[in-house]
Image 1: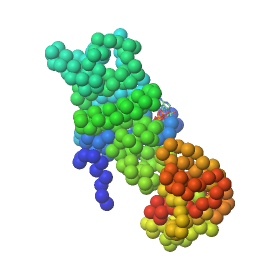
Image 2: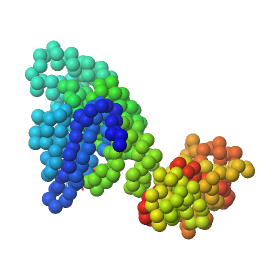
Image 3: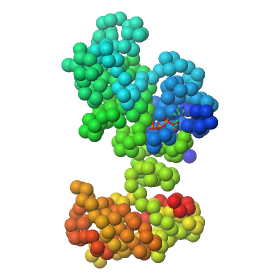
Image 4: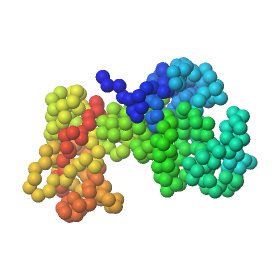
Amino acid sequence: TRVETGNGQKPYLTTSNLTKQFGSFTALSDISLEIYEGEFVCFLGPSGCGKTTLLRAIAGLDIQTFGTVTQAGNDVSSLPPSERDFGIVFQSYALFPNLTIHKNIAFGLENRKLPKADINNRVNELLELVGLTSQADKYPAQLSGGQQQRIALARAIATNPGLLLLDEPLSALDAKVRAHLRHEIKELQRTLGVTTVMVTHDQEEALTMADRIVVMNDGVIEQVGTPLEIYRNPASAFVADFIGTMNFVPGQANGGDILKMGNVELKCDAENITERGNITVAFRPENLLVQEGDDKLPNAFEAEVKYMEFMGAFFRVDLLSKQTNSEAHIKGDFSINMVRRTGVKVGDTITVSIPQDRLTVFPGVN
Ligand code: ATP
């Protein structure tokens, strides 16, 4: 089997069988993970899934109950944070309020007792890198949230750490600043080539920024993969449901490449069906096609348009198909051109189809 190499070549950070218990509660269960040099990895999952605990174990801020962490080939499992090589940015900026921006960035460098001129040069370089040269003499409270987070980032990378840890760095910012900073952090990371781990509960952040995403749930890893792999081939119903929008319709499989979804027969890529009996057929709204004119699409079924929402670039459509299953509501996203041409409106019965390579099958009924 091919080893997933992400962006880089060799593992830089590994966790082996990492487990963290708080009393009788298991927050992390047997987490084994390899992160490659220069990679940008996101830990993604719902609140309480353990992603912050995993990041803190990597930093040494929380000590694992079992398991090991290695960084650059060294076992760092029992080292305190101060003896590990990382910079970290928290959600809450965590700048020193009584120090100027310049002093905030210089902090880690001064701890290393570098010559004053070198420190000044490095701080100026970092201020330029995050585009805040003119703010050097201000105090954190005089800066916007986005600016403060840029400073926190500059401070985190000041000593050229081998590892950059980002704990929901964008969550406290408003949508516009967040989108902007997302792009800036990604650019900066690419320029520096620093191995980066970011915790987020925001799937869009993970999809746009990560080389690989680690999807977590209830203290375990559900799936590790590139954004495209995770989106296209979710390994579990949890992943399919957590990332993007997914239709789940009960069906049956008999081991062949034909699935039944109510009265509808669907041809499916054979590798998708190893299951027999009751299954859940999953497909994304944007993969539904509307049949127009006389062209007969495969895997087609009729459905009534119950609700339409104008989303700008497309319509979000709620369909009800008696053919597919008792009362299965199916979400569809149709491009405007398609809808305009066909003039689809609420109450219409239309024929839609699911391309066979866009079907995913999960065992049992979810
Ligand atoms: P969020 O996005 O809400 O921060 P998370 O995925 O980062 O979620 P963690 O903060 O890692 O989740 O917490 C995982 C679980 O461990 C939660 O159920 C949390 O209540 C529990 N937990 C975390 N820290 C402690 C602690 N110090 N003592 C007891 N339980 C804790």
